[in-house]
Every structure is written in C-alpha cells, then in structure tokens.
Length: 217
Length: 217
DNA sequence: TTATTTTTTTAGATTTGTCTAAATATTTAG
DNA sequence: CTAAATATTTAGACAAATCTAAAAAAATAA
Ligand SMILES: [Mn+2]
Ligand SMILES: [Mn+2]
Ligand SMILES: [Mn+2]
Ligand SMILES: [Mn+2]
Image (tube, rainbow over all chains, first blue to last red; front, side, top):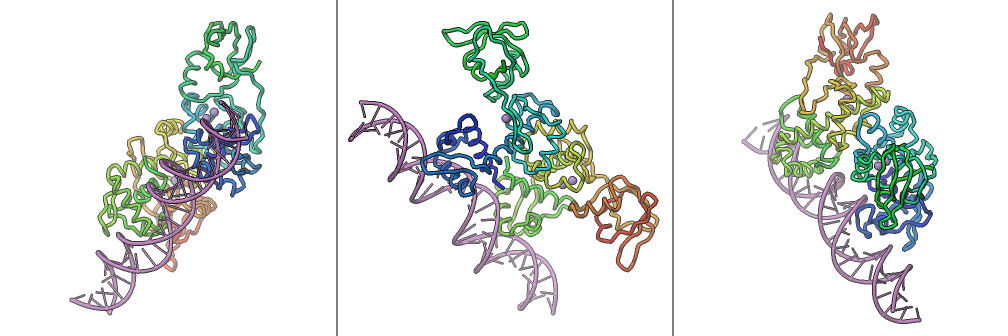
C-alpha cells in the first residue's frame, strides 16, 4: 500500500502523461505538487524502488503497469466520490473537487465497488471526465476544444479541462453546463474570443475560457 | 486543524473518560493506540501545547472544552459514516468500523451536515451508539448490561459495548441484533452464563458476551 | 562549439511521529 | 514506613517527507 503522498504523486504523474507518452519531468511534477524539485527527486527514487515508475537520472519518469493501475484506481475513486457528492448530497460541480481529493485516499476495494453500484455505475463525473471501471478500463470520448471550432460549427458541451471553482462557477453563470448544445457564430480575430449561441441566447466567451470547454460535434 | 494522529489521540482520550471523569492515564492511551507509553508522553505534550488537553506530569490528562468538542466531532463523523455504509451501501454492522476509522478524518463541515441530512438525521449508529448533533449534543439512553439482569427481567437490545467484527458476527448468528426483545430466564452460578429467550427461542450466552450487550428495560 | 540558461540531483537540515533503554516518580504491599 | 512493583518521563535515535543551497548535467543560444 502507498501513503497519501505517494498516491498523489502517482496520480499527478498519470495526469501529466495522459495525453502524450513522453516521460514526465521533475519540474512538471514539482509544480503540480506545489513542492520543490529536490523533494520530487527524493520521492521519485522511492517510487522507482517500489517499481511503480521507471526512472533514469535526468530522463524523467514513466509509470510502470503497476503504477498506472494504482493511479487509475485513485482517479476512479476521485470521480466516483464526486458523483456521490453532486448526485446524492447536492453539492454543486464547483464544490466537490477538494473533498474528493481527500476521499480518493480511503482504502477499501469493497467500498468503491459498492459506491459504484449505489451510484448506478456512472460513466462520467460531474465535469464530464470518464470514470474507469473496476479493471481500469474506460473510453475517452473524442472531443474538440471550443477554441478550435470554426464559425458555423455546432456541438455539445461534454467536459472541461480546467477544474478550478472560479472557472466552473463562471461557466455556470454563463449557462454553459454539461450537455448543453451550442453553435459558434463568430471568431474575433483581435482577441480570439468567440460568439456562441446557447439555448437561443448569444454569448461571448474569451479565448482563455473557450480553451477549456470540450465539445463533441 | 489536527493531524490524523492527533485526532485519533483525542478520540481515544474522549472514549476513555466518557464513563468516569477521572484523568486518563498514559498507559491506557498507549494500549488503545497500540503504541508505547513514551510515544504517548510525546503526543500528550503536543496536545497540551495546543490547549486540547490539560496535563500535569504523572497526573494523566483531561480534555479541555476545545479538545472535547474536537473529539465529539470525530465521533459524530465516525457514526454518521457507519450509518451511511450500512443504510446506503448495505454493509453489515460488523464490516463498517475500519472504513469509518478512515472516513472520520475527512475534513469538511459542509460534507458532514449534508451527509447527516441525507441520512435523515439518524439518532444512533448501527451499533446503537448515539450520534452527536452539529453542536455536539446527544442523549445517552440509560442501559443495563445483560450480565447484570436478574432472572425474569425483560428488555430490549439497544447497543453493544464491544465493536470487534468477531463479536458482532457472533451476535448476528445468535439473532441478538438491535431492537430485539429478550427475557432472562436463568443465571448459571457456575460460569456466569445466562439463559435468555429471544423471539420464542431459548439461547445460552456466556458471561463474556453478556457483559457487552446493552439492555433497556 | 563554447557559453549561458535551465533542469535535475546531491548534501545536509528540519519536522512529525515513533521507538528502546534508562531514569524517575508514584503506588502498592509487607 | 520502607521495599518492591508499576507507571511515567527523558534521552537519544530513526524513518518519512520536506526544505535550502550548492553542484552537476542537459538543453539552448550565440
Ligand atoms: Mn476533481
Ligand atoms: Mn472531476
Ligand atoms: Mn465504529
Ligand atoms: Mn459504531
């Protein structure tokens, strides 16, 4: 079994290598963990000793199969707890992340399976992210970022790539929640902001925001 | 905020002083914490520095008001999570304690209040123990231990004073679960075991078991 | 291809919670 | 009331996770 800290490192390494199979750099981990590179090097050695990552000095790290399985299990728990908090305890989607950061470390396979069942085996969490099944399998639905759409394109909001409370509250206020259909009308060259229509209403969205909205066409 | 370890010490000190207002001894804490007396002395000093306990060398410890409030809040969380596990996730009463030992440290006042509401503000946990409310208040229902009843006495099983899985499974097998009515027919002088009638069936219960069954007459 | 910048690692300390062994205080028994 | 037994504390050490400062390697630029 891993400590909380080890689990957090594994999860962060997993997320950093999720969308590209490069080795993950010490500094990237340090930034996400909000710690110093020297501390990361220490922990990296420990995880390598435990065969949870492959590591060669100065070459960055990669999760081993065992490490990846452990990381995905933590992600699974995180997302299931988020569903629980939103669906059963009526939290809003911007309120659940920090609590799930704690709950994801609770250690009971039986608990996770029963929670999954209690929630009727949800496929996605409140932010649209896929929930891995017991065996770590999940299908990543393909998406395009709103910022990459062209004028006239139409699509469905299926997720976000930024999970801060501030960002999620902002989307909520704009009415840009999961499942909503939108049409892109104009792209402003000047500042990269986009005009969209959602439920008949015209909305302007800055480039920074558009970058983090995931669309299925 | 306290560390997990500090919280566990507070909870144990609370339970050790629950039924008598004596100061709690170092060795008693050490036994419950499954650690050494020297370690307890170290932690005691730390908790005293934080004004969570009153401590004079060689004199044992007492919770301060702040310490007691913190301890009761942990107990509240423990018991609410146990209700959740039994009522919502269909765990048995002998399976929930260890998981609740972890869940009780999750840190979110909002979560606790919403969980309480989700469970319809339960008054007792699956073992009959009272659940303190938000302000730490609860009423301890008076009870007599089965081992102290006299022949002919009748009563209701309202709790247990031993929470090991082995003990709870044993009770379950005997049909001695919360809410059952029983009548004591005979006390055996020889070994202190008692004969009882539950739902028409005659059962013999050893002294050791009878000592841990709480009865309301 | 050298020099500069960036990244990573090492060395040595610190904090938290624990331990063993030894010293000291308190309680119990004779 | 003294001696023995028990309970508690101190001293000194250790493992985990972190830090700062300095050294070393790698990447980038001139
Ligand atoms: Mn999250
Ligand atoms: Mn999420
Ligand atoms: Mn319990
Ligand atoms: Mn209980």
